[in-house]
Image (tube, rainbow over all chains, first blue to last red; front, side, top):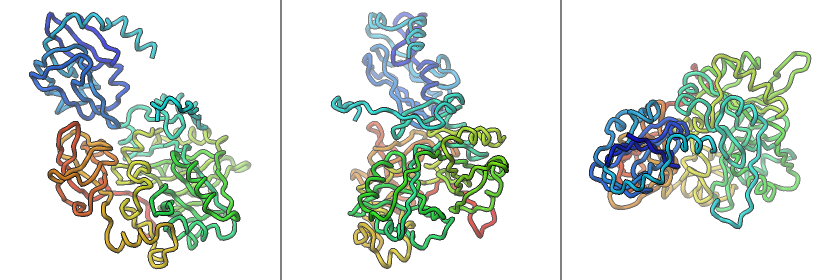
Amino acid sequence: MTRYYTEDHEWIDVDGETATVGITDYAQSQLGDIVFAEVPATGATLKKGGDAAVVESVKAASDVYAPVSGTVTEGNDALAGDPALVNSDPEGDGWFFKLTLSDTSELDSLMDATAYKAFVDGL
Amino acid sequence: MSDDEDLEPIEILELPLDAWHRARGARMVEFAGYHMPIQYEGIMAEHLWTRGNAGLFDVSHMGQLMLTGEDAAVALEALVPGDISVLQEGKMRYSLLLAEDGGVLDDLMITATPMGLYMVVNGAVKWDDMGYLREHLPDEVTINHMDDRALLALQGPKAVDALLRVVPGVDALYFMEAGSFFWGPKTDPEPLWISRSGYTGEDGFEISVPAMHARKLVEELCAQPEVKPIGLGARDSLRLEAGLPLYGHDMNPEIDPVEGNAAFAISKRRRADGGFNGAERILKALADGPSRKLVGLSVKGKMPVREGAPIYSENEQVGMITSGGFAPSFGAPIAMGYVANAHIAIGTALEAEVRGKRVAITVTATPFIPHHYHRRGKTV
């Protein structure tokens, strides 16, 4: 399994053609207290860079973009009852959705952990 | 505005406590032309701390004005619908600065003081307010912008306990009263202008302090065990729960005070006599009811409904959300918005549209949580 990151502060764990997507610890710390999360429906087709999910803090709503194109196989239902999982475990239990990749070459433009850390440090 | 390339970048200004906020770990954002603390440890924790203890807010971006000159109060009454000329020293009123057509240019606090009329206006429109006041008040009235003073708010059920230890005598004030109090060593005390008022729905105080002494005062206040610094984020969620409007969002020049649910600020004498900007429109709205009104809205489910969301009654758009968010005190979304007169009764079922989906909302009495003001004549 390989973890990639985007400049929109999402992480994506890839295992062959399937992947899990969430937002990074940096992203949740910037958003603050998460009070609502909306995940995509199973079967939804996502286009790289398109709207995939919504996360809302006390003060604002933010879009979560699809880091790669694909078809959603599962949304994280636990977020409906406990959206604060995104704060407490953003890169684990606070994942947003799983998908089947439609074009694995899209991964080439994403960052690895080292590159993402350098990206965040430069903000 | 930010996408207009022809505009010169506007310099973001620093307030007197800028370095102190940063040292306390605040996340700073631009607001009303200043760098302001949006949060320290987190909006939810800061909100709940204020409801249970005492929160210290830096609101130095707001405009502090002093109007002096003979008959300043009478002259001001042409621009606001409140009883200003009969206001006793040490008493304050919430009022509205009215455009010539009766639209609301700002909401503000006016206090009668021995020095003159002290006004606190919103930071985002303070320069416009000053220009408007200068244009419409007679030359005999002097407008002094007290930009050498910081403004703090200490809010919450334990605010009085904390402030009393730092500034003796403040417990003599009741809600919407103000006075001058000495702070610091007896040999060289500093006078502070303090009112028992605020923007959270809780008991609390607002403190005007010379900018050069602001840091020492906030450090003394934050040394009290009841007090933590609170950012603008919680200020917004606290005022929304308290059902208090935010100018520029819940009120603007298009709407009049009756539409803005601020008819209480139009005094009995002024209703009878008129004589303020837009009196004809405003008195007609009082008599006939407004065509639309600012109402509180409870929201079904967990998804926040935010500013700009259209409000529907079946397929007809009947209004717009002007403030919306999450209420940390009871863990649910709440909102305020303008709704056409036929749909403003408490309990009316409506829908808001968020990201193409309809959400059930219900017209609800405000405040969403009870106010806890220290009113004269009431035991608290």
